[in-house]
Image (cartoon, rainbow, N blue to C red; front, top):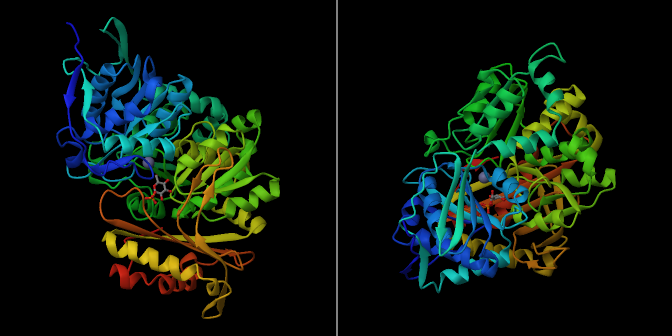
Length: 560
Ligand code: G1P
Ligand code: ZN
């Protein structure tokens, strides 16, 4: 059959502006006539001449509309001069797997089909994001270009009659305008599993997990929350590490995540937390829909904050073969993340970077060889093995630390705090608020905290007093390319290093989500109850921001 390129006339849609991590909207928005087509065409166009003859990776978390979108993207890439696509079987690839594939195949980039931790299904969210040739999310300049193109788009190109079945692994060749177009449907997990085996000592971990080196099998509960990690988890933890079948749950990726909200935190991973609290597990872990986030809990559901998780991994990084081989460069965290890792960096004499929220800000530092480990308080942990955060990698890192120390998770943390002191941390989320009052709240607060007389102000609650040292709207200059990201969140830093941070989410699909972050450092009082230790600063934050007045909310939707 001759394959003809069709040019379809279209008109712009408003709001195709990628957020913290791609464009996320309701499925019903994406399935409007030409909506997805417009956005995909703008992604392709934003690559300019480099698109011609290029290789791209395509895949997503298996949520509703993922497979249809993958097939549509194949038909559009065929019409836009792309030479080769690597597509996960049935459109399935975790976000870390896409990043790994882009790097291993020296692809121009990848199109990731996910709304990450947002719920899936016909009435919920879908998302599309572009990752560049380093395997990381496209930087601001690139996504701004996509958005600009979307406001002026007049037509898109597609080959509607191109037949493709992405449920079968194999190579499909087509001839388009005299040139070959290849669609290689690949095993969704094989490359990623191979990559993990290069990084970690699987032989040692297998002896530890199976109990050969300790006398008793490790009791794990790994919860994929019906997201994309299910397939990866089975191959890695069951087949490669020899864990028992009942160590993994919810391992079938479902289009609606089985009704679960696939966000690994204490609220949405309730089943995991309750099961581990009531059982005799050594470790519990969960991931989000696309597999880049992780939550780690110890015996009896002892919670490891992501900020602490990052710091502990940093402290023990040398027990992982990848870092023995490649060395340890600097560490980094996003601005709202508690600064526990800074203390480890200081002790080890490493550079530590504070970047805005969003994984894309880590990429340049990694590419420049200045960063090897980083994380965000939002359950993101990862290294320079790829350019995305990586949930399964984080669990393998924790297993390596447990194996290396022979200690329980709780004891590892207590030991860590005794060395470095403890950053108590919490995040309050107020989801789906009205946008206007939230914008007003942020601008009022910014005005109030940036007047000169705010510095030095003292806030007292009970026997705790906090004196304001710095207050601003966080601005970041990338040390590598000198690009500037302004207005990245309101920040009040007190004399003792404690902090209040407030920002609006950039990943929600409707309304506004307010995030309030509290970070309180204690050198010696490290075994307190986090909720009690943080109460004074939370009250102060609510007073300064007047959040209840602006949002009409008296309690957050989610507390982490
Ligand atoms: C949230 C997290 C942020 C993370 C992003 C993508 O973004 O806060 O740390 O990088 O999801 O997973 P936000 O909704 O806060 O803009
Ligand atoms: Zn995610």
